[in-house]
Image (cartoon, rainbow, N blue to C red; front, side, top):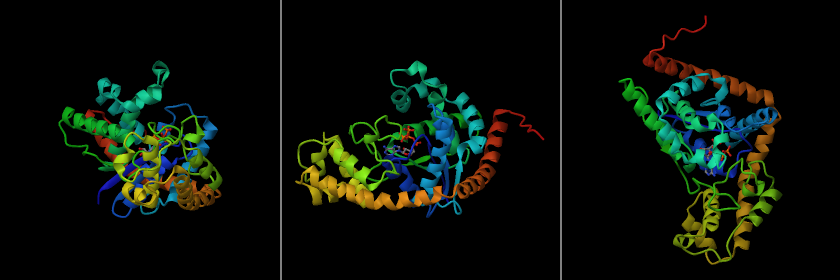
Length: 335
Ligand code: AQP
């Protein structure tokens, strides 16, 4: 059975983008893969986090994943900072990856923005830590949203260079799993920008804990253009906001863009948005209720995460110890 690894940052409330681009695909993969799911809190502090908020968001993220259907018994759910192997391997990868490779990462450019000199060094080497997350488990499949494609290519480059530098065939190739009609959900305010949990505008995203009224309001206010919906997919060309809403509808209804346009082509956005909000509430409402149930039992969440950390470390520690031996570390550990 192939081993899968994927992570999500507790840098805010998970969004519809996180759900459709990643989490929902995680659940499907649990059927026929050995899955390791990680709340990547080390990644989250590459941007400033208020400590109390980070703690709360970490628990909320774990609760949301459980509510979405992550199975912590058959698979593993844990916090990245609980397993030291991630940071240990990331350091080795910092020394394998080239500055020129990191300079090409578009996510760093987008997140650092104009104030690049003031971005954290952690944000710059974020892709090396992400490579370590995956390679510490010898995972071969990684379900992510389309925005992470470039980081996964870099993770493969790092593995190849490590193998070449040390004359081994130790880290395997990773296959990105970028799935579904909403692999990149865009902002509700700007169809050319990805929906993000840290976007300063709350109106730009659907949070997984938004109630029915908030969802309906955000969809009603979502930016569109004055034309009715087209009857063919080609008619979405040059209409990023329309394409985004149709993609979201298709993903929630588990269908394709063409089927959505068959029903709504020629109709105005008023009718379409009403149907979209209704569909969204019917899909997200039960997850929201279940998340709240989990959050009422914090000790149950902590038990699951502690057990997950033990099982994750049991896989990662020997792999990272072997990587350390390959680079020439003697590998003495405190008694
Ligand atoms: N808009 C999106 N559409 C599709 N997939 C998305 N993902 C994120 N945004 C979208 C996927 O969700 C998974 C977890 O992402 P992450 O939390 O590690 O960080 P991110 O990609 O940087 O997502 P955010 O929401 O934009 O977080 P912040 O604001 O903290 O940077 C990944 O698989 C990602 O592809």
